[in-house]
Length: 146
Ligand SMILES: [Zn+2]
Image (tube, rainbow, N blue to C red; front, side, top):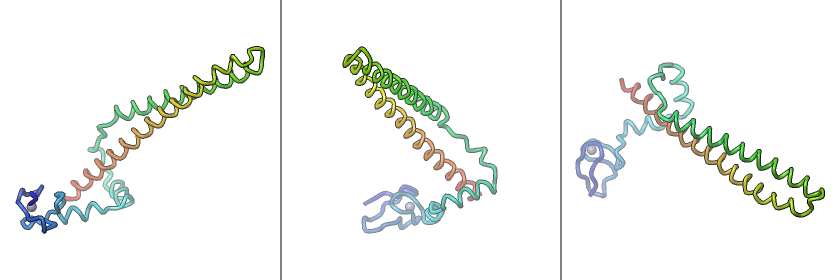
């Protein structure tokens, strides 16, 4: 037995959709399912056509800023590490000998952790962008029903 997410009716397991309202087991009714199939181009077209997406405001601005900061810090760490690496290499060829090569290990660690920070920032950006796209799609779908 499964319970319809839309109307709450109980259905036999052998049925894929609700006998009462026609929703599928995950609560999508056939009418909406069709709208979910909108391609990105169609969505973009309708958005520019209606040009009233202003009522969709991103709730992820803070996350976006933090993600940008994390990426920025990541690049700074990478840059500094590269400088330390170069300085260590130059010094190791001079009088310091093998001793300056000690600087290579923290420099490599710095480059790797810096790149990880950049990656984390970009992944967060991507997640937030996807969430925003979904939000815009939903806003668009709601408008179409009016
Ligand atoms: Zn139902």
